[in-house]
Image 1 (spheres, rainbow, N blue to C red):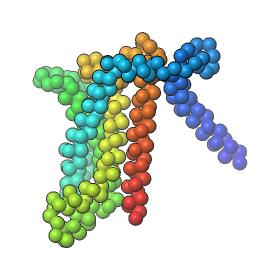
Image 2: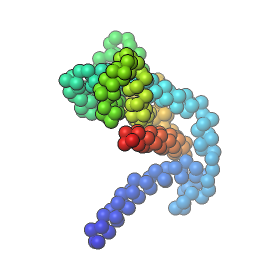
Image 3: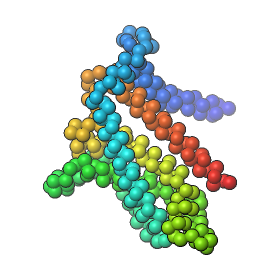
Image 4: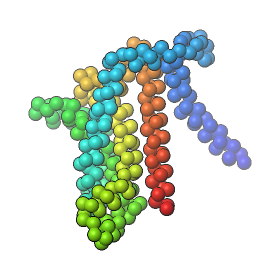
Length: 261
């Protein structure tokens, strides 16, 4: 009992340690004044309204969506078909994809940014496209894992063979049988990849900087000018991530349910 009580107390303290800063930041985004009391002296929507009335924030938000979404779309169009082909028809080469996944985790953002600048700045290539390409590689682990798990859950090779035995061509078996079956896993992996890239700061800040201001760079600037506006940015970011997390959980639950059936 004592061990259980100690574990519960430790878990409660851990939750408070994690949740309290988030709750305080969200309260500050709606606080009219918060100087001398434990709780805000008044609540207001003016900081959030001011944020959405700022053209710079709207543009930064759009750039973040464009950059993260573009990287995810490219990954789905290029990396996913490659994973399908390798996993289904050339499994002996899958070890190279797994090695690439490990290498993605082994490169810190600062080292990667310095390397990209030194290599690509000499060729006159826009660094936005360089960052976009780096983002595609950065989400390789999430795309690979989501695709691989989906293929395992449905036993993709036997599913394709069965469809072809029934008269479907390879393209028909892929587009009309396999793809509709595994798309929930792909969708969940795409949303997870988008959420990771949307919050990325180190690479875009070091390689491009304020020339392509994203939400994270906008937040960094506001930290030195207005704490309320910065908290409002964090609030919007948390709400967006909560929505994406909810969608991923629902899609994953449906995928597991369909697999069990």
